[in-house]
Length: 377
View 1 (cartoon, rainbow, N blue to C red):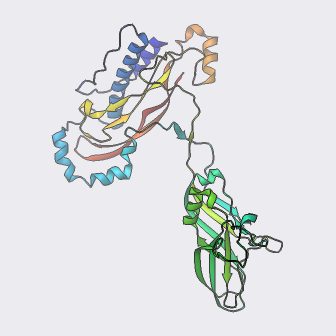
View 2 (view 1 turned 180 degrees about the vertical axis):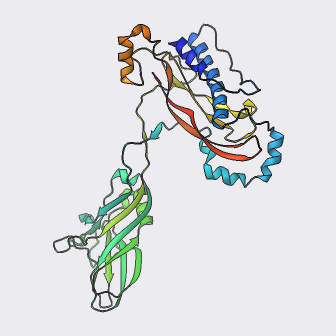
């Protein structure tokens, strides 16, 4: 399997090569066949990366642009930092592994509607207020909230009127707290107020921006005891429909959230991850930092370095095969197969800002430049 993997790796290295040799890799201690093979895999991977970059950028050879020429050309370019910030090249550089991958199967939540529920008795006095508490699942609380609106239905008015709507944050009552007792404000903490002009004789749905309050609740879930909603007209009549009982069906307050769910999820451990000091002989992913300055590739503006990683190790017939049928084919025709090889099973792109051979600054995304996972196939 090792010989087959070496042949496959060597066959993948083609195209023009840089005039400067790849950085030499320090020799491994004697008597360590696995270490020698690992060193060979690193060297092949570096040469393959150089060849792939030139090929994918459609360059016959590395542009002949020295560091001094780069310094002369950069001031003529658009604001470089703005370009770097826009495309987040720092994200391509040496970042700690988060072992996450894009979830391409599960649906991503976009809109969440949370209906008002009864408040906890701890915030009530003589059974009031019964409304409103909003419950959010941990999944929603870990999303990025783009927009949050509280919707309240206001009863119709017989004539045009000015309505004062206020939102009060509820807190548990202290021992001496009563509806008319001292220590006012223990449960009534105003967080929003709004002046509304009503002209219609039909009911009116009013929306209130609630994003900041929601952020506070998500940061400190224990502070979410609910809210009290009032909307008084000049005569003192509360027009806000907050009753959760019969007769108010479909008119209950609700919260509308527009969220952006993180589609990266913890990945299954389908491949091994090792470090350079590992004695693991099986197929494994090893760290490899590509340093373009060490290549003498000053024409690459950013990133200067990135984590490419590489695969190395032995593959047993039943170990981490990429496809289930691989083992069946090998069992049916053991002499017709060279055996599974340790190879990348998942790769991701990098962003690159570089000078082309016409001394123009180009931004490009190069696919398949980072090994995310290794396996046997």
